[in-house]
Image 1 (cartoon, rainbow, N blue to C red):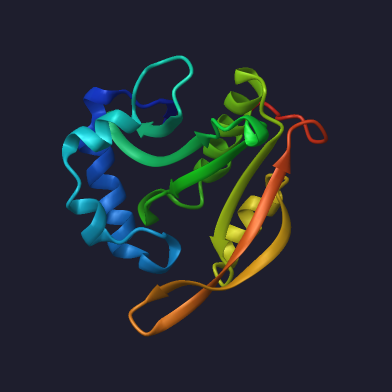
Image 2 (tube, rainbow, N blue to C red):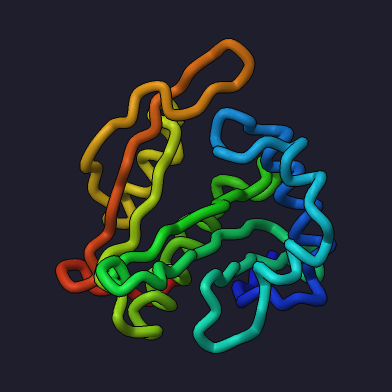
Length: 179
């Protein structure tokens, strides 16, 4: 299997929406948004997230197995003056059928490389559900460090979950090329 990773474009909004709705449905504890909230958004919202502008506020990368989406990860850039040095990794998802092949690591490395090349970004942050051991290990392998735990961060039904806050300092750990 040959997997290509590249930036998603607005014409791929339908496939992106479908994959993310699968993610929200399959792993409600992993995302801050619910499947109901995101399903209600118009397709234009999904397309705007995939704008091709060079300084887009959000950029989403995808792994492709032929023409099929095999995973996604996005990065959102801060616009306010005092926090422009920070960006947030969001919407990381690799379907079960593609896990265990290094796609998550390749997507994360692509996001980090993009942040470094874009310039002006020093820190890439993320949150991950604390008991999601596989995701926590993946982010740690990629060089992210934990800096705090937010209790009661997400509620799914009657269950509350903590979110681990992690960061990657691009000045200390330069982004490496993905395999």
